[in-house]
Image (cartoon, rainbow, N blue to C red):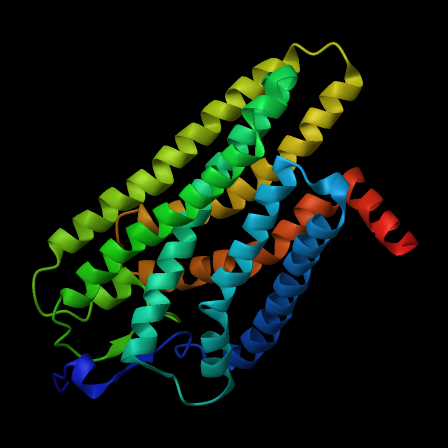
Length: 307
């Protein structure tokens, strides 16, 4: 195959799911439905948390941040994917690929850190209820949320620069449905072991360490819940923490399957479908997980409809 530099050509070809052309129409319809659900569900949470004063609490402040994050995260890759599935044109500009890589990495890393912050909020609510309003004061909540976003965008800047500094002198066909570091490194004709090691270390820092912190928080929460003598308190603690724990599992398990497992012969095809799950399906489920059987949300909806 002819060797070309993608930056001079000005575009990449996102192969996506072209190995399965008979699935492309089905995938387009399914992904479009999930994308619309993601937009409406997360916008609903943001608007409701803003309008109802009863939801002006740390939990719903962080949940609004998560909803905004999910909207941005899916929008950074899904519209391009829908465009590529709809017709034969599967290209993305070089600049578009750079921006997509940067924002997908930044928003994904931000979500890892934000989920840790949310687990700490639940720990403070269950284990330190008398000091909760002091521990999770508005100033600290804003600092923690801002720290999550800053960590994500700084980490992404490092990876994006390292990736696009590598001379991509091979063919410009990216074997993925969006611009991702491992897929782009496959286009290089130089040794990329340093880039792969940097990605592995950063993935360990922003995936494993947050997961350990979350597990530690929930270990303390489980210990506190088991000591509760009130059945109502037990049910309330389980209800507020169970939703967050489910979201953590839906986000971290696919991320570990992609970034922390050794590459295999079929790993790239598996990675596409796993990435499709956590970029399309998971953000659409988060609003349902947090709002179903949630008395605070149902009460807020009733008050809003009553007004």
